Image (cartoon, rainbow, N blue to C red):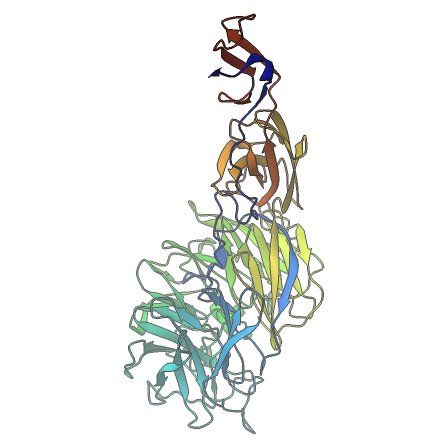
Length: 621
């Protein structure tokens, strides 16, 4: 810097770097590349129309923690909870639909569709009253939930559509008792899950415990447009109830519904006893069926229904089913094959394929889950059994009395559970004997979670959305939070805040979690009032040396962490505030022209040169 006209004797000099204008520190809300945590969805029994019970969107879970418990509801819950747009939906035997906030378990709203019909004196059955027993279904396009109940006011079954925004009943279709040979409400029960496809709500019916009266198996197709012209399938023979909690499966590629029937009464001369049935989307008579080779001797005669479980659609060309007799079958949905027409096991000679620890009586109920080449089924008294499936050359590993076949695993000491689901690489199943929720590694069967004890009704099956598991437990809904990968990470800096701009800062991260194996780290920086910038992408190296090229001021340093090999954007995040300060000039020189000495009154030009980190130091003379 050059300054002219100041007397030499009056001159002194100070030099310093010019400070940048530092923005005020701000809370470090948000984080880099943040994913808006969606609340997920589970809008139909066992997640999808194929009833796989599988949510593929969640990172691998290593366990779970206990979440909220809803307020006490007005009746028992048998239906699987459903989830949509941040709300958990459930229904009770008192005919009430509850909308529960997914975040905290508080009740957002409820709607009673009418007083349900009680089971009267002399009528068989062990469910009373006959409120909403089967799992509802959510129409995400129309923003409705559909439920079915028999009303006390008219003794008729109805299908109700409730608008999820207004909470009003916007559809009420009475199922006429005059369909087919006559739908007699006094001997029928609606337990199976509702399905939604092709402009219909499919509503299955079977008998009640005790098999009283000449009931039939039914699937009623109720139009969603409000028309009262229902379609239906009616079993050709007495009984053959369609009562499995899984209800109706739909092949999305064809629109065809599938369901399983129970035993006929009598077995002799019956048609479609203990069968998997396929119909057209408009229902009507079966367009294809499967029936075990030994259907009469081992299934129908001893009342060991194939229809105790709904089939699971593995693909448009492969389906699995089993039932009370404890032997399983792979089928071709395009041609179910008739009697002994399975793809596996071989029909000639026929040898049954055990799937439930060799048990051949009341072996399995509800529904089956399928994920990544494995089937998961509940086996009465024996917890969960998983079978590996060869989808190219259809076959599966078996589970006889030893249950040691290659590719098979089974749980031990678990007892009876309801139908399992799969989420976060884990199998989740609810004890129906009061032992709570279990979680198992989906590949190995190793137990990863067991909650405290709580009760749940028969055939209770959980649902999952957004990493939360929901269980109907008596007259409440219980939630659990899946724990996955690296659940937390801490970040530190050396030297601690603050340091001079341009100096190196060593960042060190430490991730922890129940299954935080070989964690990877990604480092970030942002000005207090700016946006995040990545400093280094994912690496297993937990340190990073940051040398700032930015002006002095207030900053935040951040880190993402995830389990090694994970494809998740991140599993845990931490950030810390950090301040960069100015650096002093180390030297300054001053010269005058002309050089001293000079006579008094001479104009002298002084030039100062500072040794400073800033390219534009300030001078004071």
